[in-house]
Amino acid sequence: MRVKVSFYSYLKDLTGCATTAEALTNGSTLDDLFRALVVRFPKLGSMQNATLMAVGVDYQNRTYVLREGDEVSLFPPVQGG
Amino acid sequence: MKRQVTITADPINESSLLSRRVMSPGMGAVVCFLGVVRGTEGSANISGLEYEVFQRMAEHQINLLLDELAKRWPIESVRLVHRVGLVKVNEPSLWVEVVAPHRGEAFAACQWLIDELKRVVPIWKKPVMGDT
Image 1 (tube, each protein chain N blue to C red):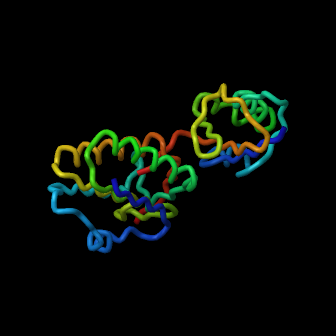
Image 2 (tube, each protein chain N blue to C red):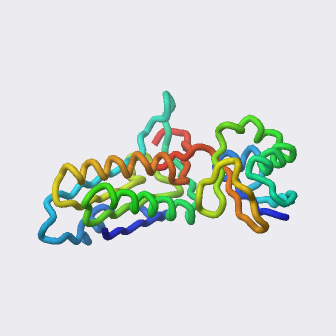
Image 3 (cartoon, helix red, strand yellow):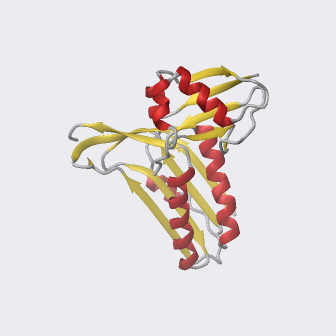
């Protein structure tokens, strides 16, 4: 299956792109996706514990099981206001 | 509870917002908060902050917060405006208005909403260096 991935804030700088796609085996979790992305974008590895992940417009934890076509967003802690 | 959420690159026009306030006769408190960009970031002078937003998720998360706020306090209305893009020093980036029957719930709800906004709403800021 394939999922769409968007990066925000300085994760865009670390990866050098705002969006990408990743092919994963069925049953993969957000944690599996993050590990696959670190292989492609090694600088993301330093953000392992500081990256928030959302599917669509909702936060999800790393055990969330992905589905075909999911839109995943990765970003650092938020700073609004 | 009435709500109005605006995330915009346009400057926040406080007087226009105030002129459009609507409240019923039973209301006794209006709390307004204005968040303004400071001229320093740590020890460095800055000329502004560049705000980035994940707009669709930010609007959704703010609405979830307002759902929760409505369960916690008897609030009549909340209006919230968050500016994005470049916001210069001394300009407002956030405007929040809470209308309630009494000041206690108005202050508490406003404080809670801003604290939670800073915790969960996907907006980020990057300092733009230089003196104003």
